[in-house]
Length: 158
Image (cartoon, rainbow, N blue to C red; front, side, top):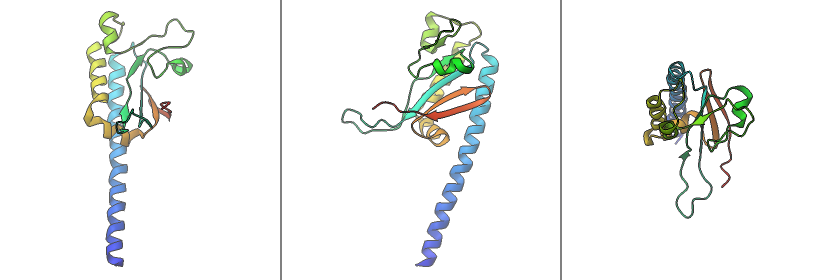
């Protein structure tokens, strides 16, 4: 039995190593993609989303969920005032928050709406759910900037 246990332990170790390698590679690739996005969209300084597993889903199974993505020109302390619901709750009248659908009726200077739509569809894509969960975890709020990702704990409230 000890040989079987050793084989099993080796399998688990290899799986953990591959997951860690994947997570590192995925974060690096995602970081490069976001750097390019910010370089070509100077009107956007950050985009924010949440990812979590709800603790209640009206009788349906509770599954990993990625929240809506909010784009903003907020920087520094103003980012703390951008809610997870896509609203700015601060005092700086220069701060804007938007999504691809709001850009249709209210264009923003320095923003390529097709790239905003592409980032939204990439993050919200079904195939990305597991990748993002592996990269950042569950019950987190992610703020992506040209400098990288700020990941903080998030409670979805249900």
